[in-house]
Length: 240
Image 1 (cartoon, rainbow, N blue to C red):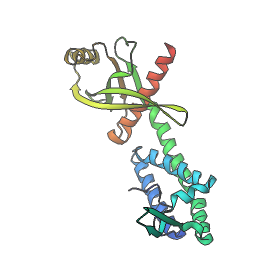
Image 2: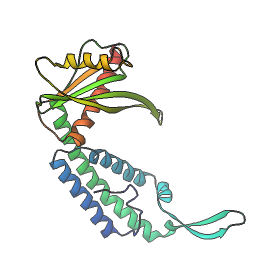
Image 3: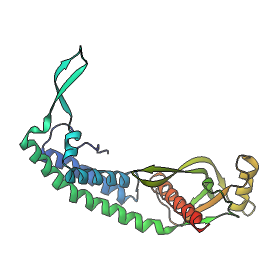
Image 4: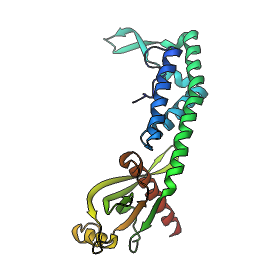
């Protein structure tokens, strides 16, 4: 179930209708969390909470959030004159009522998601396989959860980008293969095999991420693995 970011100003602005839509979405989010599925629901809730609190703090953002109505078109001069829909005081009061209802309800569900994340993440461990090279922003990640006798191997690449004077890191996972473990095929041997097959990374940073507990793979394991990897690499670089 999806709740668009412009759900407050989209379509009919009616408190009871918007309340129903929001509560249905939050009920869905709670069901998802009940299945220990974190993403993308958790990140969507963060985005919704930031958006609605921004609208509440800066009312000028509401002018941009509402669609504009074309009142006159001069096709010769290619000019359009718009009449704002939010000149209506009753409409603005309705919007504010929706915002006042949304903020605490979204926050409560968001906190439940954060609590779930904080209860799950400690079950994960990350370790380096072999000697780490100086360049660790690219390499391989091996993931094994639920005490399986196999590991999913991903090639990772960390990117750094700036937004609003802050520096963020993102990581991309590219699936390579799934390898079964045995006495002869250890994690160290898997790394050696990768080095032999893929010459572009002659001495790759390679990390193992494990959890003895089985969690939903796409919605929980992969997102947590990415966050752990970014944090681990960032900490390693600061030590160097």
